[in-house]
Image (cartoon, rainbow, N blue to C red; front, side):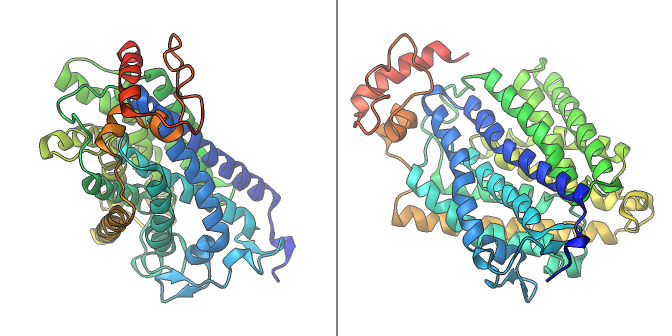
Length: 443
């Protein structure tokens, strides 16, 4: 058993606080997504995020941690030796912190990555099928990829020597590719490209984005697993890239649409934060500025592709997380500096194309694997359970039909209907009431 004297109290405190910050990002994401959908499915979006925290926690304890970080099996996956945290006592150490603190921190990464996927299928997924998908997805997609990149024995970490401190591949590219696959399997929302599908509450979106930005300091700086210099540079890089992302997205809006929007500002912040996630421990603040700016610009243009190409990634998981993560992962190969990494250098700092090639290969492999496996899982669940709700239920809104409640009681319209949990609500009852509510709240 490792000696408990190796545990550093300051590092442990920082990682535990960071784990709590990442956990706070999940309700933040719920508000961010919930505000962006129409009022009739706002609660469903909150539920899809929040239940990921519960479901993934249980799976993580049973076998998830062991598959991601247990004893290595060929660089591809961990074994089940640590299933149920068997044999991991309070004195077990990972680096300078208790192994249980490391496990708690990584648990929050798994939970929020799964929650990100819900944005790609807003307004149209069966809740039970979503839960089944989350369990299958973290098992088949997330845990192996986390092992490849985050575990020192994983093949991407040990053989490719890819730089990815906080999960540009594991979290961002993974969720973007998986979200795109989900959107393709479930198909477009009714009225896509025809009916207005504006966010029902921009203030909720801003509040959610604020919680995400706040939690991202734990997400990135906490990934240093110590409270020293690396955490400090990751912290400042996170702030700089988020701010630059705002300006990048708004610059695109002003050039293209002649106005800057609140939704664009917070979306740009998220894009910038996504971009710096892999690079926060590899670049200096000037590099973070460049990455955040380019991620904001790239994501702003990328979200428009769904209208040109005809796929309905409802809340732009692929456009923001996939593209932003790709930008950040690749730019490490250009902007990494030895002053931060302690050795590896990007093209701009005289490192040649070697690191850029490694970063690109990791991005392609993770993206392809995540897309293929997510598509297969979604297809299988769709055939087995059905993944998409009926036309009538989608028109009525998932809050009333699935959850038996509504986000807002507007002038008593929903009194006695949605709040009687368990009562069956027919589409003929729900559609007029929900449309009346939506009409009063939509911008």
